[in-house]
Picture 1 (cartoon, rainbow over the protein chains, first blue to last red):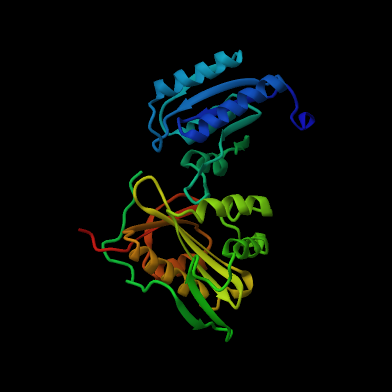
Picture 2: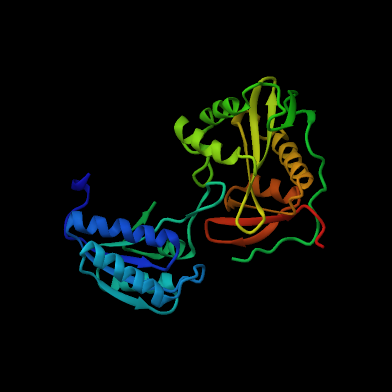
Length: 130
Length: 181
């Protein structure tokens, strides 16, 4: 499936600290290695998740280090969805990647607030990782 | 995440069994899972969900494909869940379930085969489920529903659910089954 993903895309990954955002991190890091993408990770404040920004940033840096991936990590303060959209568009990223939602006890998928905002507002193509 | 539950009790409704004639004149019965007319109810539910119209899926459930359906059913037919089934003869035509969350409340879902929708089956099924839940001592129930699914939202309101929070795409609704103490 590698051919569907052109190499050297500039990818912005948003991580807010929810479980699905960490799953998106793991998968995007794998993808970055395979495809030779250029990755930037933006840590945002997700009001729905527990870990604070510094704890999230530490975990992001650990995952990157263990995978041997060089990526810029930055912290975006304020409204997470709009800051991500602003950065993706302002810096000309090719792709904005987010966690694809949590699963309820019954197995229903529900999107997080950040993903909802981003898909409705971004002009950049968005990937939700399931 | 905190969820607001209504002060008023929904119903109260009676637990199953229940029999009724639906709007199409079909004789249907609602039974607690395990008390229905066939020996292997789990297999009957697999058949129902494999026949389910993909258009009627909601937020990824039921899963597509028999394997996915079996794995999903195994989780929600577990002993700590509450399940009721609507039967037309030996055929399962509707199913409703309560699955425990991590806060001591239960998540609700209900599915009715396309040929049995808009015939009053969902109302009877969900009332029986809430009755069964109350009998089990369950006091708080919630669900999430796609905002554009007006028939479902109206059904939930009718039986006592109130909006409890919402995103752009789906809303949460909650009901109380037992008086607050």
